[in-house]
Length: 320
Image 1 (cartoon, rainbow, N blue to C red):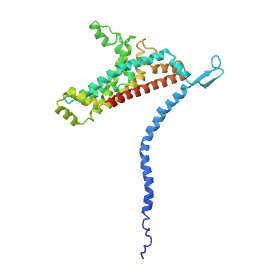
Image 2 (image 1 turned 45 degrees about the vertical axis):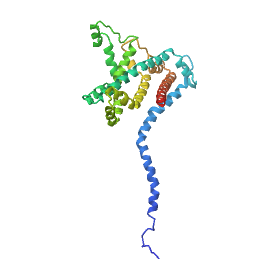
Image 3 (image 1 turned 30 degrees about the vertical axis):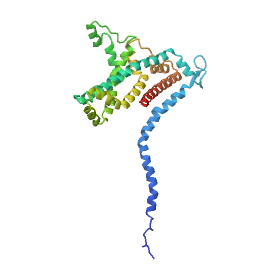
Image 4 (image 1 turned 120 degrees about the vertical axis):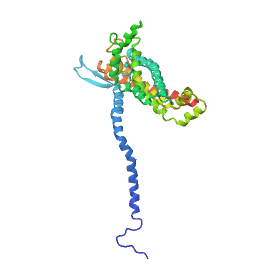
């Protein structure tokens, strides 16, 4: 017969509380990542999700005033898709969408083409001072869009622009702020601002390519152009898709640059881009509900174009 000394816990007694504490510890560990994510998620919901939901809500409402000057009161009523019909019935708003789509079809490939060439050159084995030139090309992105637009606005203005003065020496008289050229002058500003940003995204993807692939390609007799075309570009395809999506969305959100350049020319009206049209509806026409509908239309257009582009890329990949 075995005896237990006084004060000694029975066998297994210490293990039982420890086992009971394990589920609580596991639950605590699972909550730790959410604790780190909580500030971001809170700001994301507060500054992104809720404004979108509020805009969608406002787009289905309309404020009706009673009396000649609204002195008899006003009421907010649900009008369904009436605000969307009014927004799409504005020729200036439709023209602004067509204008930015034309802008994107030309500007986005040009900008990404330059960014790709710069990324490939700076990541080539023969590149000199790549760190210095990466910083140099990225520097314009650090300039706020409003400041950049003001700088370029003066460079486009006759009598102030050294560009126009130099062109005049060779017999050229470019009208960089005319009705037919101002859109491409704005495209130049956007390209100058964002080439370095997109270049860095592509460079980051290029740095993930294993050195063994380059060595194998050189052993097989591939030159720099063949390595770029057959090794580097296919392997940075995800980065190219990402920058394309960002550029498509950014094109539809065009606002600050044309808004500033409009102070230098009469060729830009108050509804030159979709965002400018929504801004005008809200703060000039005092019609916040139509402005909300216009904003939702722009967001849906960006969504359709972005996912349409992804679908085309994915379909092309499946065919290979």
